[in-house]
Image (cartoon, rainbow, N blue to C red; front, side):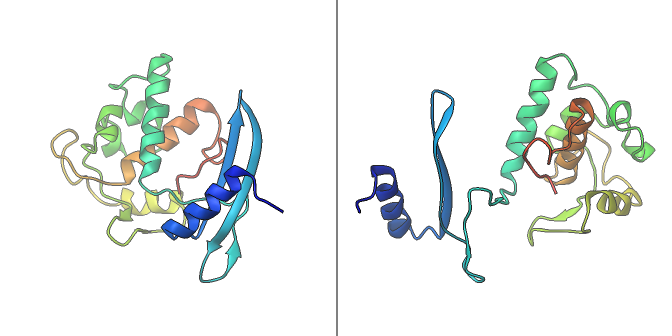
Length: 176
């Protein structure tokens, strides 16, 4: 039995580039005509890849979060000058003056809820992590310094959830 051209290409590329596993979808005129999984999701556990395997895309999530925020701004539901306090009033009062722009540009002055070097979060859930960092003072006044952190984009995700009425998970993603 011969492989179709897509399968042949995928198998060749996986072997040539040492790709352990992947999923693919071929879409024509808005219709999925082919959806497949190849290889392993976990080499250590030998778990096969499936078309429903979730991928941790790490910092790439920020690109999608930023796009969603700008889409809400374009739709008139949000402005770069809107503050955290206007949108997420249950967060610490010291965070209320932070703007959407400061969250997007890593200039909010917030402490980080993740260890960016180790790729770990300080807690198992978003709510627990936010509770833990709420006890810490801001590291700088909002807009004063640039510091790459995860916290701002977690808050942006919460704002997207609040304005859309859907959780990130309901929208097909994961921010935690």
